[in-house]
Length: 107
Length: 401
Image 1 (tube, chains in turn blue, red):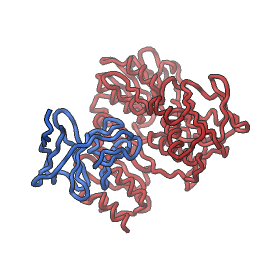
Image 2 (tube, one colour; image 1 turned 120 degrees about the vertical axis):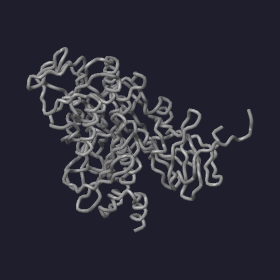
Image 3 (cartoon, one colour; image 1 turned 45 degrees about the vertical axis):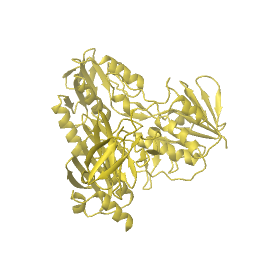
Image 4 (cartoon, chains in turn cyan, red; image 1 turned 135 degrees about the vertical axis):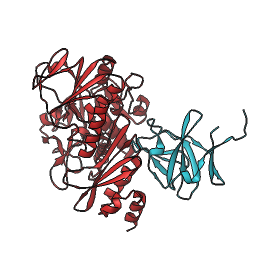
């Protein structure tokens, strides 16, 4: 065990549309990385907590992502489930931009 | 007003029970469901995982208890007495109500040809378990009906190495539910996957090893599934003297001809602003009507006006449709990297959109199209067709205008 955060390089900021998301697979798991309207970046677990649907296919508006299947929605900054049928929060992971590269801490 | 009874514990009835609590209703809520399970989602039934049918409950027993919902599992309503405001139950006894919601759903249409008892339905968890436990690689399955359910089932069965034949009365599959352009794409994909089509064909008879067509041809079948559509379950309403047509007729508030009785979901035919009643068979509609009916039963005055929306997944293709496309609409195509969008304009106004791509690849475009439809815009067709114009920016400028 270590408290040192391990950052994983994920993509370039320009790979993500503003107010958009991309899927990121790493270590046998899937994540979603978001670029907010203010160009800040965020990372959550990749699958909706209601059914295993990739959230990166969903619409991002402001700081919300909507599941492409059942329209459940989350605040991707906090992972909070904000619209049914999603009722369980999403796990979130630290994300940051370094020299135009997005990196995430998945530990 | 302190007692609400809901008949039917499918997606709509169950959603309504919870939505009543979300609306602040504090009286008693009783949910009556015929099936011997917790309320469950139907869409996963056609998607078995590792050969096993998924039973995905809509909610757990704890959630029902925590919300103070009295769930009567495996109990049917025998009749409704609108004057006494009571419901007689198969388990014995009666429930009295101040407001009643009918979410009785729909049941599969039955074939009437000789041997029709050999055909399996595909609607409930029990139906799905029967089909998937019997269907094995190398067998022949004949699906009668080339609608959404029949085509989705065919795709899943082909994925398991089962030979599938689809028999359809109409000259093309998916003619009723899906815009022609995308129906043709699905048809071609199924053909490429080896599904046999018998179109424009009636059924003469079902034997133990084949479906005999009206023209004498035989489609070999170890298993026969009837997927010829559903009919709304209106029997309780009809016997209670409530107005029914193609469904239980409601006004825009989802209230039936009895002021204390509401209807939602597959069984409800809802009055439209332009006249007539429309009934929708979709997951989202079941939930959206449940929420509106619950708010109205709790004292609201809401007119139900959600834009119809559904999806279908076949092989790796996903189609989503928002609004009600009609062949008379002006069609505008937008070609995208991940698939194709079709917009439908009526007198210049955007009224519907459909998108076909791999998986949920076009879901966000359809969601934006739905919001554009709700905004009531009349866009320049050239702009809609141009993949370089972001639909989100179109929406933002529509909202700013």
